[in-house]
Length: 280
Image (cartoon, rainbow, N blue to C red; front, side):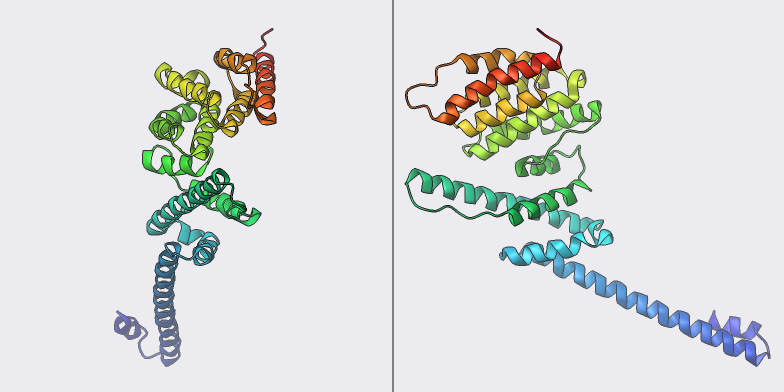
């Protein structure tokens, strides 16, 4: 092809010289592009491997490099690795919670440390994964739920679809022996119910209602707090009877200040729902 181009230039040596220069430059550019693409592929492969490192600092460093490269984030292999990273970080976070629970039960000093940087990192990771998640994929939406991400959408019908997809995972979390899982399940369920409104089928609505009621009777006050606070923000009138039951129940002789306060807040949640729905 190059020879044909030069032949068409005929005897015009000036034109031939220009064409040779242009063709050579194009070939060099092509070679550089090929090398650059190969280098990016190599970098991507290494970063994906680093996302699965046992060293948390290595994982964070790899994630930050990937997050700053929009093209790399669109790579399906990178996206799969980021989901694996989210799953890993969620499990390690849960392990820290369990260790804290063990120390609390055995009256040991100190707890596994967490920092604002850890929270920011998880928020950044969730935002990145949410940018490409397939919202109707049960596995992907469950990984988000386990990490504590919000699953609701501004669109009512889309929220209803997501609620149906996420329901089995949320039910599993609501029965977990880890209180943080139960806390996440109730907050997510109330938000989905609030967003989906009348677009959600009655079977899913009732299943989610039962999860919320279960949380209002949870043995851990933290889960009750989340249920009450979520209902105050977005609860519906069908949850008022369960809130009344909590508000009017006796806290018992071993009740803490938080146990008493959560009952007081249940009454506030009832008022908020009635005001929101125009009830007296």
